[in-house]
Image (tube, rainbow, N blue to C red):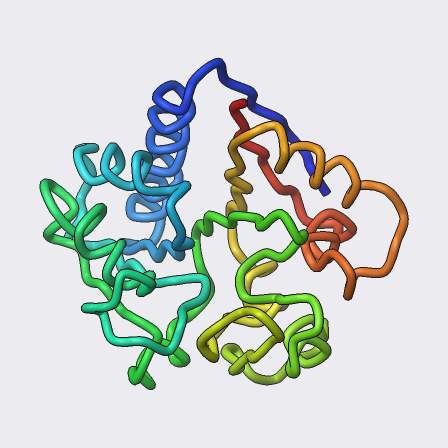
Length: 218
């Protein structure tokens, strides 16, 4: 469920607020238990906020960063989420953090619960790699899924992907949904209406009794 909505006039304002809010969550976790784990999404939308987050002054050496999902491509590919995170977030002050990629890395499946995650959303209503028509979509959306990570292949999606499953993501302490543009806002409004989750998988988070904080700008 969307528990809070933050709307901004510009990408710059959104990126600054999201970076500061995440930093506060991570810092609180470090103070409480000595460590924090963050999972972020790829694509073009999060680049600015990741760059701003990399400059925030928190104890980054105690932070583990991973990905919500990933394409099965090398980091040298322009389509690699890991490549985006390394160049946008794992720099400046955040260079001290530990980065755990998903592709060809069994360690990712052994990570514990996330303190914070940042989701995106496509114009087809997908989030993470919960892709409409995906061959493992039922498994990924299963509230009782035993696996934390599953492979996903879907028509038109290009490469096969890896994604954390719904229960692994819903167990996060803080869930942000970051979308930009009026087209995606219209998609979100449609997803908030009744309909099959399989058609618009973002509904799995909108229907859950777990608070999601929306960050949006036109």
